[in-house]
Image (cartoon, rainbow, N blue to C red; front, side):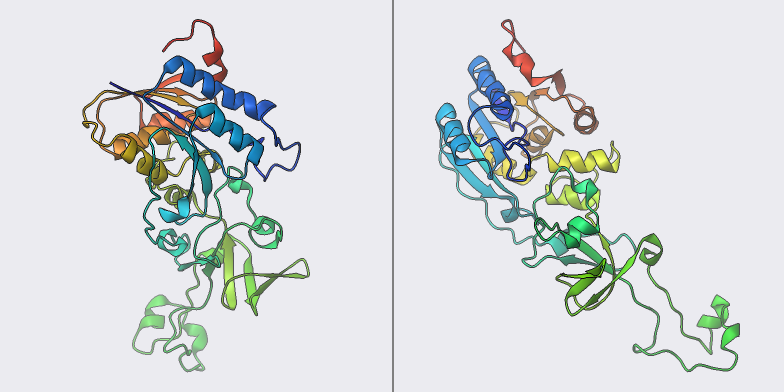
Length: 349
């Protein structure tokens, strides 16, 4: 039997995106959350452990984490295996693990059309910005107009279709009679204007000279001139950013799906590390997992992705929507509730 300890304590208090009372020293709520992982490591005594958190945590905190776990931190950008720029540090006892190969996946490769028009990624380097838990709140202000923390914008172009060589057919005196679709497309066919349904779904924005005007102010945008529907990324696209199956979050509403994905791991990075960690372990070997702050069950997905068939998986998680997503994919996960329960004197699996 191989014992694995997973964990990625919530980074809310450490992230550079935290505007109020960001913790920069190994103390406070953020550190107490990490201490639960340390206590789990002491009690569970795993053969292998893996801990993840945001690269933007303060250096003093990262140094202390490295000291407490007794291993160096490995920095990996999810951009190597996905269409998303997502820098994270990983602490593990699997020795030297090389960086994943760059798969060359770009944002345009994972976009889906929601209106019938071809989606365009407004991204200067071809990758999405880091997916965050609050992405469900993204509107025009965050997508385009926030000059401090502008997010990834997806645009779907709106333009007349069905013209011949880009020109309308000759306008005739009986033009008004061409509303019947059979007449319009018959022998004396008329020009058919078929705009994507996107125009009915929201405001159409005009891009001129690489800028969009919002409330009288011009904001730069990486799009060719034209008319667009500007939207945030879909749940399916966000699943693809995190290298999970398209329907992984099918059990929850969009808001909770976005949040769970933004708080989660990039599956292919975890699978990369586990692939080296468990190299040579038979696929039918019993794998006993203790997962702290399990989220949407990405660790369980990665073990399945690697072909392990005999997994006993205990998870500590309190977000009911994240639990629902995890259980809808892996009903064999054993949920244990609040991670602080690990501190109980008589704790046992």
